[in-house]
Image (cartoon, rainbow, N blue to C red; front, side, top):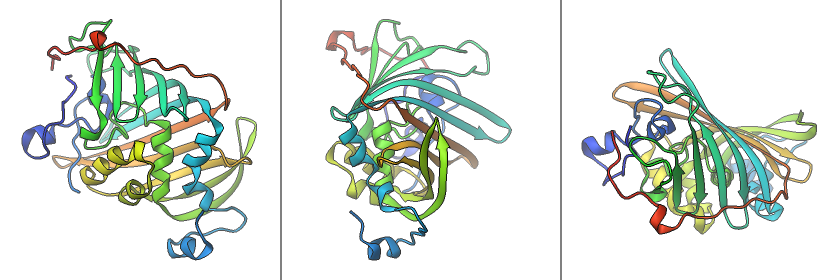
Length: 286
């Protein structure tokens, strides 16, 4: 399935926008989007509920990650519509200082089985998503570049994995944060929080590198409210975050759960952008 170039919102082109990652990567049918330091007082105003945890650290997650420098990452994106379910998994690393990451995303089996296990290399950068081995008529040695600010979901789900830093920036709009308690995650003690984040609020509070993409998502999603679970370690570093998105397309509801797991903070992560000559400019097969 072709990468949609995400023209002006409205009409058939807009409805065909691939808000679900499987559509961009050729794994499933396209699904469109449509529609539209905290103080104690500020936390209370947002309905935060805390016993021993500090809900404010959820909204500060992106700042803490930048301070950590880099991390390795695993991602999963589970999609469900009616009785159909599929999962796209990714693995790689992210440089939070340069705001760039590299993931290898593995496709699930498509209805014909032709794309099963095809690895797609993705480069995540401020404002752009690059994909290699994308298929659909794109030569294997060429990259496809997508301007994330033109995607109606702001690339929160389109690439088959939520950009780890964007996932943290999205938490700046967190509200109604509930401290669930301490848990163990990969041998580390983490504080588990649950709540809802508001995409529009997150866009307003986001750092400049994430603002345009989140603002696009705030306009493109039918519902700005996104439930989440976040797990923060003793250093205040976000170890795991799970967002649950929901779309309605032609009367069909598609639920998407995007999970990002971060570990081995400080590990070297190398991201080199492709040369202009290596970026595919031809027609992408539908």
